[in-house]
Image 1 (cartoon, rainbow, N blue to C red):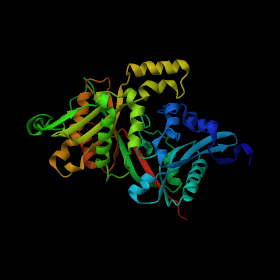
Image 2 (image 1 turned 30 degrees about the vertical axis):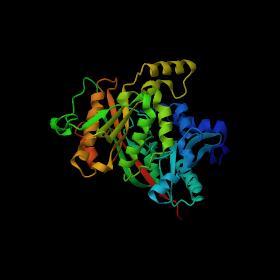
Image 3 (image 1 turned 90 degrees about the vertical axis):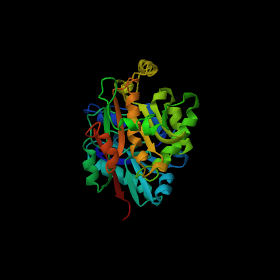
Image 4 (image 1 turned 180 degrees about the horizontal axis):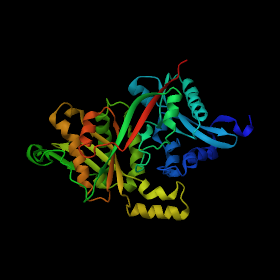
Length: 386
């Protein structure tokens, strides 16, 4: 075999190899319809231990697939003690899987990640997720040409078939929906007038937005309510204080009071939703690594809040309302409030994702507004036992 054709898998070490790891997807997928590269800066923050609160307890190893001197694929392998404690099973994770259309490359990358996880006693490998399920989660199956969205992964169409060929099995599918908002959008009547906030039987149920001068306090309310609401949902792991603090630092420059919906019953928080602007709206034409002029453009767009879409990243209802009529309508109330907010914000589209494929109550609710998912993702398992 020609030396330039020989495939090797190397662990990432040092700044230069890490830069290759970060930039590889846009080198591999440049020109593919639907692909829009994320900013290198945000990816470096996601993957660097001193920047990501995941590494407070977790650990990860990154790998590059090389043909001679050319990088042709990448993968991460990670151990998440929070997830293992939450679910009580020795499952490791892989993520950041990107590769050329070559089964040998994908198979070798999965083998490298699995070998690294076995040394820590993992029996199964699940993913892709970068780096945990609160980050980029699942492999894209459908929606390659849909609007790119913050923290939602994009994969080429050849990767899912290669996962099947490597013996990976489906664990869950996740879907995302896009709602039209703004002054021209049709009003969604998800709840009857007698059950709208501040009216009729819901007179003691109120809503408010984010308090920018007390953002840390509201962040803790959000974290506590989200952890309570999602404690039994498949795939979710609890958010730690450090996770929420990192999110606040990262998102504070783009957050507005209208991005936060807190519903309270008699002054007690019972439902929460958080929307974040879609960074691709202001960065898509900068190709991931802006020039100095590009950074000036990005800063100007950020200051002017030139976003036209956003994503609901957190939505949860207090477990105190489980099994009650009020608990059943809370997601509808929250979504209705979000759509009302859309009239005062520049957004024309809000994406709801990810939603578990078997979460039929939530899907039926959303499909009263938008009947079909715009994207579908899959989470896979691979056995690490002989």
